[in-house]
Image 1: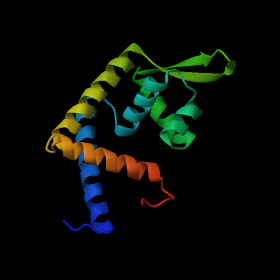
Image 2 (image 1 turned 90 degrees about the vertical axis):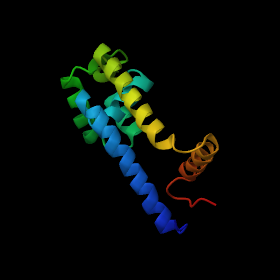
Image 3 (image 1 turned 135 degrees about the vertical axis):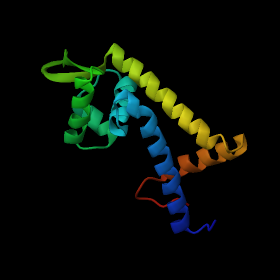
Length: 145
């Protein structure tokens, strides 16, 4: 494989698409798409939070978060609770069914990751994790050294 940035970017996108496609295939029986599964994970990790906070943590606009949350509420996976600090605002929390769905999403993601990255040795996985952390820490504005 070429090590030029364009070739690396293309290889990275192919692997990323494979991860997304296989994860979507495995969570589809739960009635979830990838956006909803991300929202479910953030709500589960952060505890009750406002929709605007969810959007911020997901890095999306509030309207997109509202669309994902509406589907999760309709499916009974997320509940809207009145914010005790501001009775006009809502907090989002997982329902018991949402906790079960989140556990199933976690299992699916773990299986997909194990199948793909299990082809690498522990040393290779460790190196890859370090490189990805470095690229992520560089942020979109700064090129990696």
